[in-house]
Amino acid sequence: MSDYDIELSVRDLQPFLDGDKWMETFGEVMVREPYKPQLFDDGRVIWRLVMFKDAPRIDFHIQLHEDVEKEIHASEFGGWYIGMQNYWQTNPGAVG
Image (cartoon, rainbow, N blue to C red; front, side, top):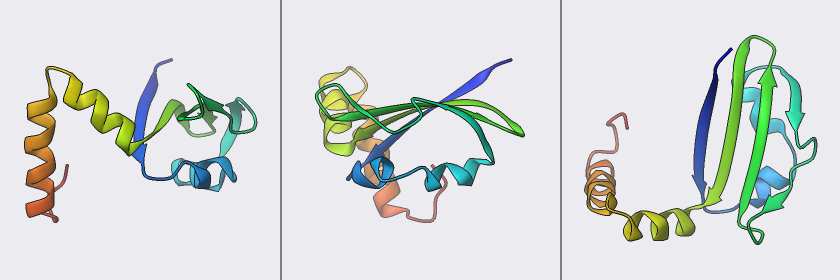
């Protein structure tokens, strides 16, 4: 069985710490680890491994947007990301 890895870049981690209602978007939760949301990496990341009833497992990596931007700008792919970010801002109806 395969799984999906989803990375969320968010401006505020608190809604993901307050509860798991957001997970219902993906389906009925059967198992999650850790059971309660926890902060990792000096309080800047949330990791959740979730098994859904009618879907494969999803590994969530939820990180502050400002940290993601720093990582991207420091990488060799920074130019690509900046270009795509500008594209999405000027073409809000585009799927990205």
